[in-house]
Image (cartoon, rainbow over all chains, first blue to last red):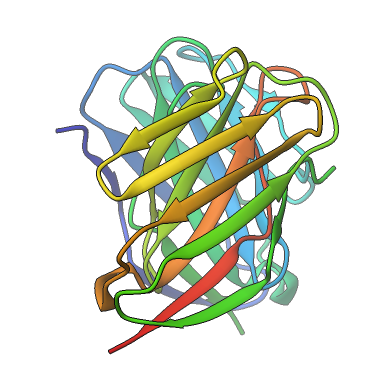
Length: 113
Length: 110
């Protein structure tokens, strides 16, 4: 079974803090993704990575950066958290083409106060 | 850039009834996928249908795809309370990324 894990289920941070969200997959997938999910807006792609040290901007990259130093790990960084980044963050991975079946982690619900 | 849009936004049915959700999209696709999300959890892949397929089954799920109308439907037969979840369609019409719709919230009452 593919397993995608995220470092925290719930996280509360203060405005201006630097926030790290970690994602690890155990199936040697090339592609990894970070989405945020807000009510009524569905999932929006923040960044994705198709190989180690490679990254591409998604639809809403502003205020975020990513790091992929190892194939199994993809980190999302909020350089200076703001209240409008309060959201559910979902990590996913896929094998082969980026639009193949994606496997999701359980999500991190981030609240920025 | 919302590629897929689900309809209805919400659906409430009795256990044992069938549930049908629809998805419309805008551009040509390679495949269309359906995912389920239980409350507060990650998404789970249900089924993938390729652009050259018209219908696909998986257990109680039946998916159809009409590329001429740029639409798909997901049918859940003999629904159960455990089917209560949000359902999303996803397409690859914009480059090499999956784009998700806003989802249909299904509530199955027992």
